[in-house]
Image (cartoon, rainbow, N blue to C red):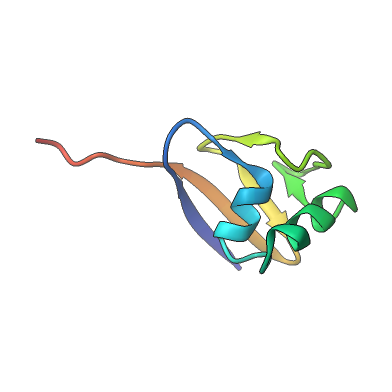
Amino acid sequence: MSQVFVVRGDFIQLDQLLKASGLCGTGGQAHAAVVSGQVLVDGITETRKRAKLRPGQSVRFENETVVLAAERYPKP
């Protein structure tokens, strides 16, 4: 299953994304998942808890995929 997560600003840290998207219930669970090598960013194992993720990237954890999208501002 996959979901789209809108990034507000230039980036979001990996641990924050895991918690904000609901893939992990707590920050501690997010840290443990990343450090143990269970999280893939763009298909590559990522072990940096605070890796900066930007729109266009994807994160996979426990058969769930999150695709990051840029925040779109309404036209005036």
